[in-house]
Image (cartoon, one colour):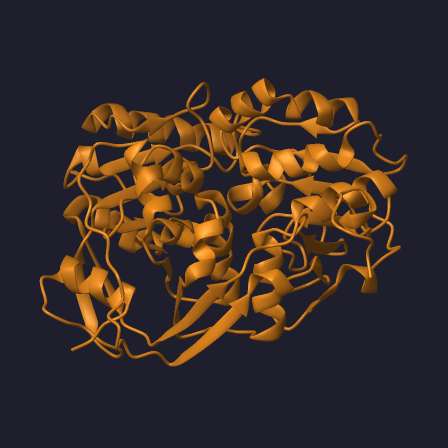
Length: 422
């Protein structure tokens, strides 16, 4: 039976020759990722064993360093778990810290053709690496950590063939906003990305799209493997992997073509992204109290680079604050070496340690009542980043940086050599 990428990965992981929509598959999990929130008492249960300490990753990311006693105690529990079972892939506060999904890519933990699970909803980020990655609930996480097993119901797949190249100043967050605005909800489906346009997209750019697949309500988001991926993985790990390609006659629910060259800067209006995106100029002039660049979707080195290019030689507008949060401390170090951090801080940005931070309204940038934020993060629903009365617009790092300089939502073409805004 011809299969899509996700069907092939899960068939291999379940020991079956083929799987298809409607099947329940019981799979062997290759990587289990736990993070600080996993160890809160509401979710965590003491376990007597783990299936393989070398296949577990523990990465503290959501609220680090701990902003309160509850978070501190959860991290104490997590450190004890790591010590008890001798887990080597541990990313505590310090040199190796970072957002779990970024670390999974950066350290080569998410291998092509394998299965990775984590309790966080944006685990699909690793789909950019040709990995079957998905967020699961707390009980299933305990089960996966102790038995090495997980189960999924197979859904039909929507295929996107990417063609062309992005224009300067347009990034894959704009591609996601295009998908959300034009194609809407993908509940009950998987998403597969491929096509000749992949060649011009870095792994970080692909991860932005895969991460945001969660916001399309997709079950899995996976990318075709190619030389860009192979070079990326070989630079990070010597572990063997088994990339999976879709069959030429794979069956898709729908197959759509995206012209990357036709993409333009977009913004999602407050309280959701589905069918709620417009060209930046339609929201132009809206005052913003806070501009945020970070998260597992947009805390990459490329995101910091384009933000620095926008703000270079300029200052953040009075009455607006710009908060920038790298995805990992390694990205932070690279950004310092490249001069991006200095440029951002000279413009008036606050550059925090690597953490989820303001994205989830945990700390380092919580919104107050009736404030307006433009964010290059993962979600903009009511109350996501703080007070429920705050309004959150979502856009690319370039648009967010431009808006911080202007103090109002602004097309990045005002500050980048990408042609005059239409």
